[in-house]
Image 1 (tube, rainbow, N blue to C red):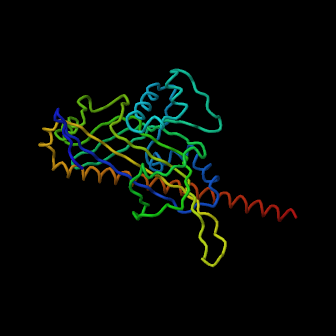
Image 2 (tube, helix red, strand yellow):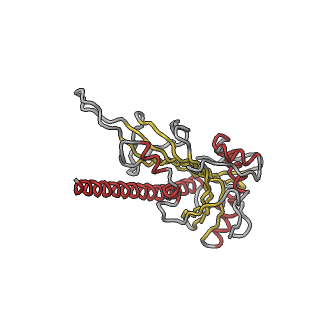
Image 3 (spheres, one colour):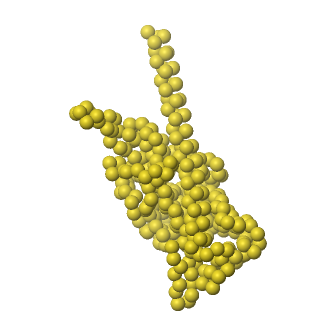
Amino acid sequence: MSVSASTNKKAELVFQAQCQLTSETCCDDPQVLREFLERPAIRNLFLSAGGKRPCQSLSIHEHSSIVDLWHHACEKYYGMDALPMALSRMNTHKGHKTVHDSKKEEIAVLATETEVHFPGFKTINTVLNGCHLVPKGGDDATLNSLVLGRQNRLGNDHETACEKKDVVHKFYLVGDKKRWVGPAPVVWLVKKLTGEDGSNNAVAYKPSETRAVSQVSVYVRDGEDDGAGTPKQRPHVGFRLDIDCAVKVEFPQFLLRILPAPQSKVEERGTLAIRKAILQDAASAMQAVEEAWAKEQDRKRTSNDKKSWVYSLSR
């Protein structure tokens, strides 16, 4: 990455990370898995690192600024196509309560807290996540333009050419509150770099300087055959999580001289720190969702066994 300087002598640091995590095969019916992933409790596991962090739901109608933050984030980062239809109507008619399908929660906003450790200090971010439940078949495009790197939890590349995808959730970072923890001189410098000259304890959510978008989807891969004309096995159905995150920090160019390391090293270390934090949280979320799925299947099997036992006694 490079430093870009304009006529007013500004410089820029860029930290970014992309990753994809894929579950093991869960079943052979994508609709059953989709209905499981649509549940708010399961959705929250993806955003709370598998339940390791508090995840608070905020009412859009009680926090009118959320609509403005989501709209601003789409204008700046995600494109207006990323603004859910219901939110678009709310932005046009402020105060109008949009009627949603009572069976499905189309949009929600969740606040979660994250920590990112850098050399010499850490940031504590309370992140505002805009959550969009995508209708079935509403977005089946590939994510090649979003996620440049494809990586499963073991870090190995894998092909998805024969994979069909049904997006269930889209999560957008639409605002945040930040505070920094570390030695006073380091915190002062970081606040100068980020333009945060006020109190270290932010109160209100503000537009974020971080672009972060994630997708939860159901994948369907064709079953294999033995090459001798044997019919294909049942399809492999599972879920995957795609994440794309980028942080840009603009500051006066003269401050490059007082960075704690060369600019390229600062970007490299910051990128590694962000990627490591994202992968840790994503892996925890995937594990928690897989465990919740496995427990549900165990309950269903136990229930079916009991029904069979009662039926056999009644004969």
